[in-house]
Amino acid sequence: MICQTTGWGGQPIKSPGHSGASEGRDSSERLRPVTSAKRIRVTFNGSVSDVLPWKFVPQQREVKVLPGETALAFYTATNRSSDDIIGVATYSVTPAQVAPYFSKIQCFCFEEQRLNAGETVDMPVFFYIDPDFVNDPNMKGIEQVTLSYTFFSN
Image (cartoon, rainbow, N blue to C red; front, side, top):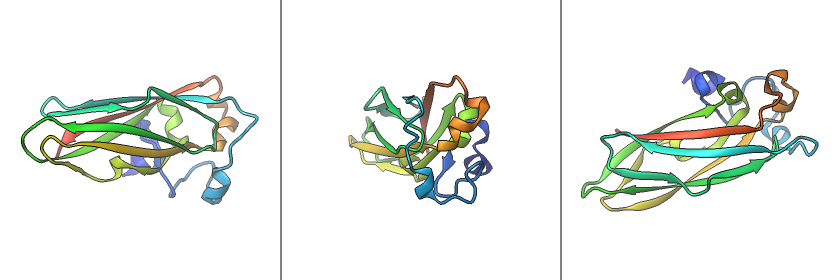
């Protein structure tokens, strides 16, 4: 839980409880695109543990977003077994120092996911990169961020 709150270890912030440079500002202020900034390329990875008989892949390779701009991405999961299975996703953002600025508004990873035998589902993630990203000298030169998920059997 502390990693979700602080962004430590590449764990993105779970919005709206965003803490950090934007503390004291409401989410509507953070969701104003910084049009003077360069777009950030967000790429997506998906994997499953060796014992989980699921296929899990991003539907898009990348999206380009401005800090403060919301984006929606989808993953597709298929249960390849003849049994219903509950899975749980872990996630990270790289480079890790971007994690405190990467906020997920809605995500399939916030809850366990039950897939019936043979079922295929689309799983959304709705996110933004905090506008304060552009004011942090440690973020200078970062043009690409990768959001990675791994599903495990629960």
